[in-house]
Image (cartoon, rainbow, N blue to C red; front, side):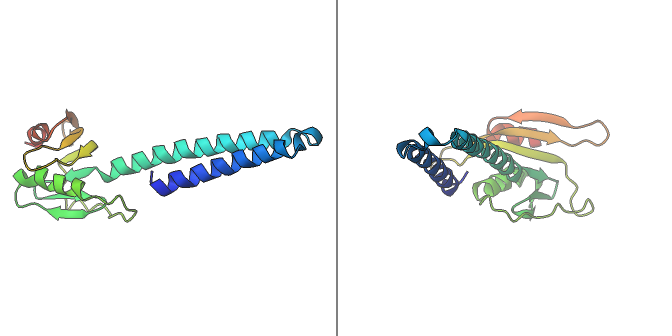
Length: 169
């Protein structure tokens, strides 16, 4: 989640705690029913539930944005759209470039039609961190799903760039 979302949730919790303290400080608990206390507790539980649900949905959305569909001549990503490949060997480099430049925005491209794009592999990235420096390799973990309409799909997990290259070969 974005930093501004966390700040908003923290402000909501602080306001709730302040109002609950004020309720006790001003002595309303002596003359008023405990209904205000119940509402305050329900509000705190609602804030925590919203944080948990929003965080989970954001992680799912980010994973969908990191998913790349690969054909023999192009790759497709929901954020970048259709990107042509010079050759099938260049797919890992192009996928790495797409993942390294994701903005995680809300503008999504539509999946191309089957006539334009015959998907052979689906690269689902669970974790990606770009390489540090010139000689380093990226941290890259996920799953490659090989699409075979006749025999069924095969899933191949990978935990490095080399394993991804081998899975796409």
